[in-house]
Length: 213
Image 1 (spheres, rainbow, N blue to C red):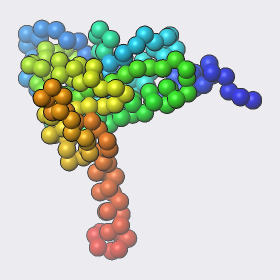
Image 2: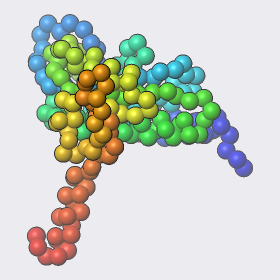
Image 3: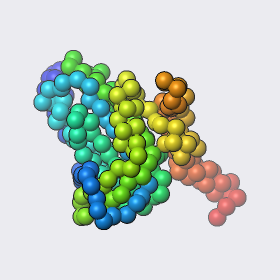
Image 4: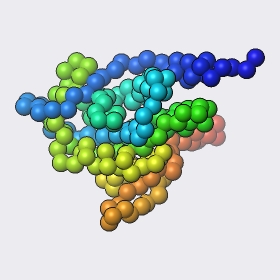
């Protein structure tokens, strides 16, 4: 029997594993720590129906899995990645991996259903003043940390784009196409290399050859 559209949507919506959810709240932080931050901005560019909204909300699980702090504002979904949460100083590859998973889910949704989700993702590196209180990251963004990510998400048409500062920190693991728009340099992700997987493959090969113990 052919699977109905509604049941297909339910399968897409329910196919995920719940991770601890840390929310973010942007505002004025009086007492906090200055920290490096990677910001992912997902822009939904059209009005979507209830089923698409539910699908989108649950696929944000990919952001939580990568230990991003998430909040929504003015048609954007943001994820903020900091060392206090990820235990890593630079989180550009982590954010890019999360973005790639979400992009894949959105492309699959649009392939299957008539009512499409129009989207774009921008990633930027910057600094914030932040305070982590339980499952909430309160922060004040410095400079263009948030603004640049939003601008890229607006520009991106169903793709993932990085600012030059974000790409500079991730270029060893990300292949991207350079673009210059209005005199500003940006990068569109083409491939994310799994260095950990490659290292494991080489180590396993060396073990089989008896070169390492």
